[in-house]
Length: 155
Image (cartoon, rainbow, N blue to C red; front, side, top):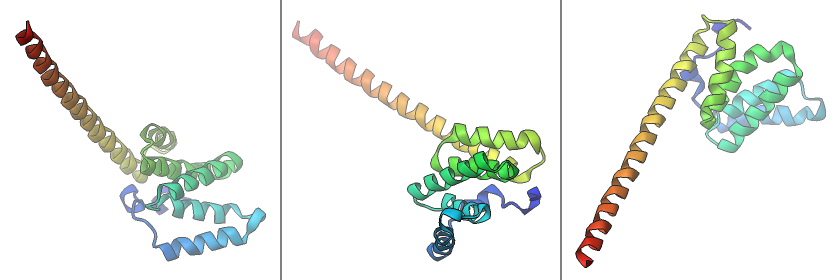
């Protein structure tokens, strides 16, 4: 599948309608133990686009199975494994899969777009983490100062 047929990362973040996911689920379940790789891939794709974390996790699991068992599908699985892990907040995993794809396809616009999303999210959450740690440190300092003044007054 050429890279220009994959959706841009921002487009892939929009969830399927529940009825659309239900169609994929019905086809997947209908094929039972002989489920085809394309059916499994389609269902996994729909699941990672879900708003529900449990469905996203199942989607990543199904994609991981395809990646492991079907070497010919690894290339497209890399992108969707990166996207699924991004949606789950597993940014290190998302980056790892995405970079593996970019190593082979440096001009892949979808992966470049996803790289930007991952980097922005990591930077934002990193700043949020710094702000939280700073706030906790400030609160501890104020509390410690108040306790210290209280101990000094008692003497």
